[in-house]
Figure 1 (cartoon, rainbow, N blue to C red):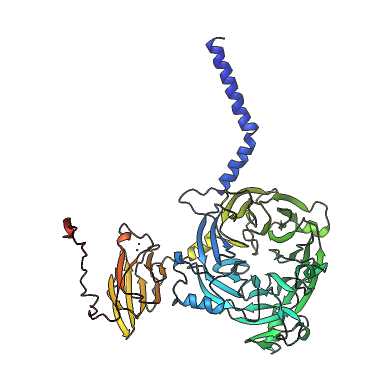
Figure 2 (figure 1 turned 30 degrees about the horizontal axis):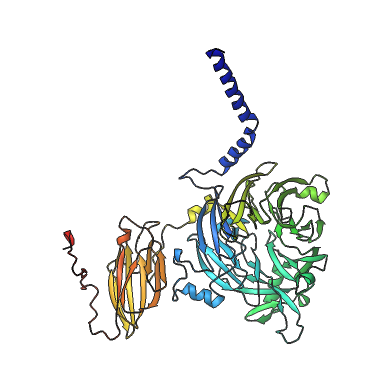
Length: 609
Ligand code: CUA
């Protein structure tokens, strides 16, 4: 074989390999590239949507970008978090509020974005703490919880929803039944309540007594009804008893009628909250029987249909949102839990047992058309909630859907017996669903809502407006306010604390009144005080006040924990604690000499001499 023919053969082989790559095994590769391109957000570019994922037993909200699935932020709510200086010190009012309302941990399940005219307005996201019957409000201009409310007469604050279309009320479901008669009889009758809160004051305005364990909530789009799934109409106290009946119910509450009854004094006031009894207020509560131990409830974006998922039945129930009649009960698969929408007449239901998302056409299902199932996609694994962008509003975007899965099994590198949670992003823009990406999170997101960055980004503040009690530059002081109390009014500015030293006595209570006087976004300073259980983060313009006992005699270097400049490491100061019986007079902080220390026998060198 001559050289030329060898070259020709080699070229032919190379050509065949290249051809096989593009046509054969290449198609999988092309699909991967297409999926990658859909979620790729180049460095420096922004995501299209904000995603708010409940943090479950982390007690927080995770904020991600869609479509990149990058974690942008965690908003601590029911759990103190040193990384954000949130509710850390005993004297932090937010810590006291958490302790007062139920404790320093929470179980967040359902983020609910505030709405105006049926679309997310970017003002607030509300979130429940199932465990301690609380709801928190997060201001989205600061991404910070600003109100935490305890709900009376209710245990297991599970489903929450804003009353569409204008967030006039907040609906919170009580899942764990309570003895109705104050335990005057045994066995006592058990019931639950649905609570209705003012979304501004976060006060519970009234409650409606209902039978069963009240689970997930949604509302009609016209402000008329709240809908809640109710399982365990058996009033069972164990799993066997709870699953006897073939049908439980969707509870529809006529909200304006309930408000009228409350205004007419029909409520029985318990712990300051009027409770309406359905038997005394006909028409307020309608029970719609649906199979079996229902879980999710979701109202279609056009406001026409309420979809309840059967959990222990392979069906969903389609209910007319105005007449409250059941229109159809199509089979969708095993373990249906939640439904979301694309705004094009399709519903997407999560199937826990099948580990699938099923896409189905609502009108076709009502008509009984055989082809109402449009598509199915496998999920990894055992999906709980799912949410499409804008799926709970009147204007879904119809592009992305997030599957929030309970088990990740083999999806990530093993990290001990406890594996991360798995979330999967699915493209729903076409006829067929396409899996795009998966990402792990800390435990344990339940539900999510998404808002267009175009709406939220312009609302986000760059700095805090200085509080009336903010310390300004040049006004720093150290004041003895009593025989055993000292207040330090301190400022922080790159990269120094003023004062950078102050002296107190053993037995003193030291109140630190700190202002970050920076005026530029993201110029955060930390204030960590060793051995005093204290680490605060102050964003620009923010003021925090905490009081700590001076502790044992010694020198405590407070230092900045947030990298703020090239001299970040030098951002430091001393709290000097003199022994109780010390006779050394406490120097005025302004005239105090910064005495350099030397080590005996070790000669100092250079400029420090
Ligand atoms: Cu201030 Cu680092």
